[in-house]
Image (cartoon, rainbow, N blue to C red; front, side, top):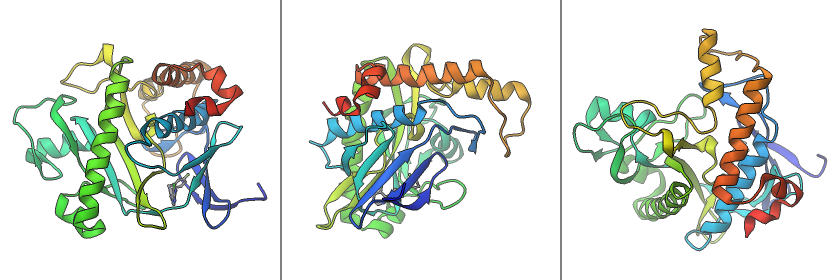
Amino acid sequence: MPEATHVASGKVRELYALDTDRLLLVASDRISTFDVVLPTEIPDKGRVLTGLSAFWFGRTSHLVPNHLLALRADGRSTECRRLEMLPIECVVRGYLSGSGWKDYRATGEVCGHRLPSGLSESEQLPEPIFTPATKAQTGHDENIDRATAAKLVGAERLAEVEEAALELYALAADHARNRGIILADTKLEFGLDDADRLVLGDEAFPPDSSRFWPADAYAPGGTPPSFDKQFVRDYCETLGWDKTPPGPELPADVVEGTRARYVEAFERLTGISFDEYLADPDVVLG
Ligand code: Q0Z
């Protein structure tokens, strides 16, 4: 891609600079499970994630402006405004899972939120909570309390970010729930534009940075199946793999089943056929 300079690689995405003000985010078809990128790709996964993100950017810009400038015809690349990213991950949790469940079990709190006693794993919280985390360069993000987050971004900015993140989550979780999907939690990233205005960046509610659970299989007191990755996880569990790199190749039926789940998530959440998206990605922008 001669018109762009590569600036960063994520586990499953690449970031390029188009010029001083614009970046290109490219979502690959790579998939990770148990934090390991597998050698087998899921066809169209990057397009599903890009299309879903763009769908949410289009439907939330009245709440918070976002970095999206344009979708490319390949359906997997997003041109976006270059921001000065805030040094925290903005996690919102409506359900008690992952590191939230771990912290709650150990302390009764998550990021300084004291929660009712006796909650089960994956239980819905009385109300969604904002649980910021540090951005770890390697390894896992670490949950932090409000005072630590305020040191990183300032108390005023933190209050603004918390309000924005909670509003975004409420909108997306309500929309998803009406389509049979529980959005258990999500990780958002914000940045500042050249006038220091708060802007939503990176991705918005793709299954890679949110927990999606099928509502019809949900029950508290365990780990509900993941809407998108459950076939991959189940297959990996049959292998006795120790979850350290390299990960296993996936057989064709696991690839096909997983692709179908991604496409189903896209179609349920957007109400748009995935074929329509492939023909013209801008259909998700409404
Ligand atoms: C996003 C990331 C990826 C590796 C930087 N609008 C923006 N302005 C400035 N920086 C970013 C964005 Cl989105 C930005 N990342 C995350 C994405 C590969 C890392 F595709 N890093």
